[in-house]
Length: 558
Image 1 (cartoon, rainbow, N blue to C red):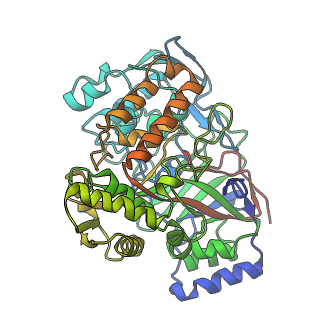
Image 2: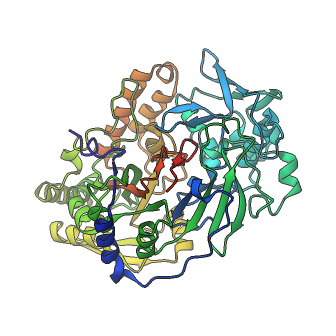
Image 3: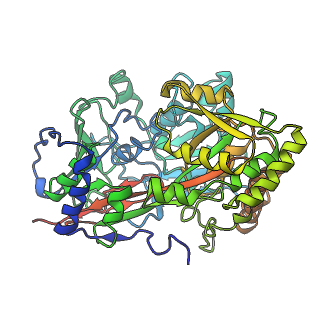
């Protein structure tokens, strides 16, 4: 049985005794801080109080792209596709589509009852304008890579890199309720990708009427989703959303609204939940361990992976035997058990478990030990690779510089300890740079080793494997393998792109190449967990976009 099969989508209730234990556990972590005033609500008994630790900073569906803001934006933004309460792919603002035989032309039909929160119909022109905003270089959207790297949309590279006219983008309105999407090559996971809020519509007249304030304050929000923001106080760290009366599925939506409260203090989160002020709170680590076995705990498989990037332009770390040696003496169990704790797992491959499923339901990453021979904890085998690498390089010692943006490096300290203990002649020092400079240093190649994370945006192996293509902006280690490039390209081309089983087999081959060449050193996969009040039912919480969905939620009265 896989390690996640027992706890996937598992829900546990926390009783008063366990809550007290959790609260006591957190007392040492800090003192209580006062909450902001609760936002008045016409129907508080049927409103969900959703507590988060990340302060919303970007609520524009066309520009947001981070784990803190995207779940919030997903509450009021929707595209042609969506997910139901079980996380399955369903229609959103579209009610049907057609696909050409070669898989390169899609025609989407917007449902007749799709409306904005001011009652104006959603049109095909709104989708065209929304997509054009994302790829417009002047927008500087963090989500632009979805169009550049995840789908071969016609015209996108010319627009982004050569400033071609926006109307050359491969999305065109046929009439008010129909638009076409033209691809340069098939995209088997396109429907799953289109759930992302970056592909949602944007109404041009409203955008320009509120330019400079669009999606930044009450009155400048326009929703095509189940809820609409009607109060936003960034400094007070509160956002309130009410049910959208013009939403096409308004009859299904049973909660009157959502009160989003930002609270980063773990002690206060537990206390708020215990007192019934919070209906849903995040929980992790030691607190999550205490809560095991209680039905109000929801654990979510992690799409977020962490891995060490070796700079392959460096002669030492460009040596495969050196990289293999380092991968084989990473004590992932120690990192998880002593540092990250519950909800996190050792990662000895690229594709994590429980995220990507094949046509027949097989979990693509379902065997966490598939590459244990290449990436498991085997110090003796590591030393043999290390000695080969040193001999090939003609050296006896290696001094590595590990790039970090934090003065506290507990995670890296474990790596350093194991590498220096098991690899004769190896020593490592940290180079600490400000957080704002960290990404630039990575992209400029000013590092030997670095730790980074990545989370899938859609349920397909390419959400991870595409990171290692030569032109991907996240490939900061400059991995460039002819073998991998060939296999990956074959998986994206006809006929494999139109044959799901054959394509998956090819992508398994691509992952095998990455592991054999040790493009990066996988470390851990990080899950999520939340406490959910037993008064709240039907909430979708998943690793993939939209992450959280209250459309099907019900909150029972006290």
